[in-house]
Amino acid sequence: MKQNIVLIGMPGAGKSTIGVLLAKAMNYDFLDTDISIQRETGKKLYETIAEKGLHAFLQIENDVLKKVAGDRMVIATGGSAVFGQQAMAHLKEIGTVVYIRLSCEEIIRRVNNIKTRGIAMQKGDSMEDVYRQRTPLYEKYADITVDAEHTTIEEAVELILEQLD
Image (cartoon, rainbow, N blue to C red; front, side, top):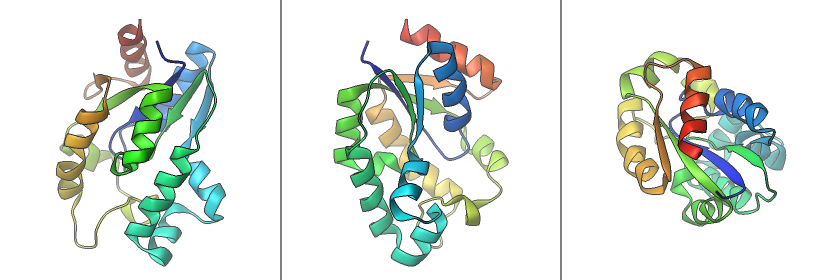
């Protein structure tokens, strides 16, 4: 097994929450790359998207993720990380990529703060559009896929641990 676990999936899939518990269970460090981006820019994600535009935000995200280093870490990525080819190639090199899969309906149910959450999406796109655009990329990069549709956070962590063994 590679030394890091990289969590990918839609906004609202639970990557950060699952990541913290997974890191505790594995005695690993935890890294939330959205926080790394905010540190790098000095702004909240939605502010960076609003001020610089979607394309520039995705470039910043790609650049930040290319520099992630360390081992024995659980890395929770932003939902748009899969748009960064260099970032994903790097993350696959340093870790096992786990796609936390949920239905579009469940994501919509969970995500009710699109404006302040900092979701990287084109103006006029719906969450269904975002889901359709990203799902093939999550599937492409995943080493492991965990269906977290009808699970608690703890059950999702257990499913990941079982598949990592």
